[in-house]
Amino acid sequence: MGSKNKLKRFKENETFSNVIQPTRQEVFDDTLKLKGNWSKSFFKNEQPIVLELGCGKGEYSLNLAKMFPEKNFLGIDIKGARFWKGAKTSLEEKITNVGFLRTQIELVDLLFNENEIDEIWITFPDPQIKYKRTKHRMTNPEFLKKYKKILKPKGVVHLKTDSEYMHGYTLGLLQGLGLKIEYAHHDVYGTTNAPEEVTGIQTYYESQYLAIRKKITYLRFNFS
Image (tube, rainbow, N blue to C red):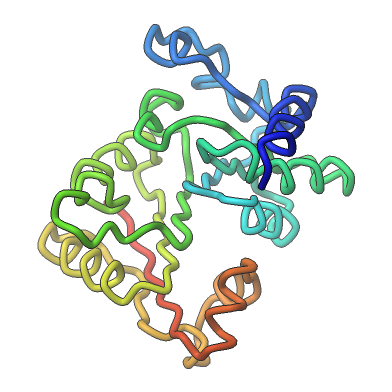
């Protein structure tokens, strides 16, 4: 994507009512007015909130919002030029239960109150295989602490990935921590009992993976 296109998208994002771009000062000074008030002030309802971390183009958040109109969805990514498409589409299609938040995922525990979130989706994250990159792996113990803090007591985390490594790493870590694994499968398109929201929605890259018969893994767990 050219720099002119990126700038155009950044400018357009500023006009979108469904896009929030907090400053670092708001985040670190704890002055973000939406914190603790996302349902009431942003979505204008009291429906459960579901986050998608690293939402990319926003395809998954958008389609989850269509599939579950009784829930609110918030796609989070630092790359606003990517989720511009999902934000624009949701406005055009008048899908009011989805929004987008431009920030670093590492700050997620500073943007929401304790027990404010009902579910978290992590879709096709970078597995960060190299040892020096493990601090960025989105299911490492530090990230899990952040998720537990903002999730409700029985809040659920979903991990959908094409990386067998990421799936195996997370599964082993969860088992070691004694966390409740609700569902786990290394090939969700090769089984008949996969949840509809897992196989019924595909990102652009996911469809490419499937075209070359790459297996898609999925697991769901909670902290109770």
